[in-house]
Image 1 (cartoon, one colour):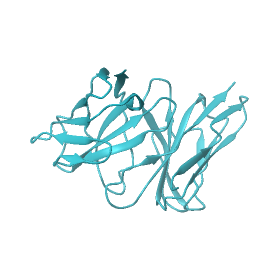
Image 2 (image 1 turned 180 degrees about the horizontal axis):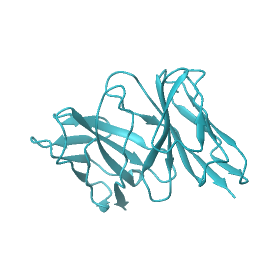
Image 3 (image 1 turned 60 degrees about the vertical axis):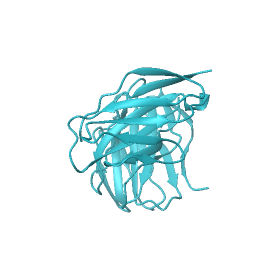
Image 4 (image 1 turned 30 degrees about the horizontal axis):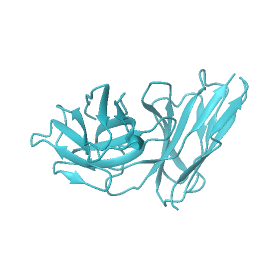
Length: 113
Length: 112
């Protein structure tokens, strides 16, 4: 089955620790995205990548970092510099042609205490 | 991207058609209407999109008014699994316009 996988589903960390969230897709999509969702809110774009070895900041990139070494993978690191890291993190991918609809993974719920 | 307005919440009886409205009065000629839904604690799911013609797929139908200032998503035979938050998004579909701006959407509850 083609799709996007995110792991783990739930993640707990202590304040001051960096943590990396995994996102893998086997849809052969060129573009990948990371969003953050807070309770009762819409999604906010953190970073996106249109092609391997290239990525751009979204609206709330501060305190986050990404890499895109492979087409299939787009890991997100939440650093200790992120002031409010507890949130639901969603990864998505899309083609670079056609109607560009984005397909989302199941999400990772990160809790930092 | 154009702003959209949706009702905060709606109820629909199971088995009936659910009609979810969206206003996008400032839509531009090259902007598409997209619909996504998000079931609690899951990632959003793409449903359908259109430019100016009505569209139908296995999940839903999308009716766009002739002036394109509003649209309606129709779930023809709602089931309990259709309970979710539904988002209407208007955006230009091109490479380089990556951001999906999700508002607060419509919380649809299907009543048994």
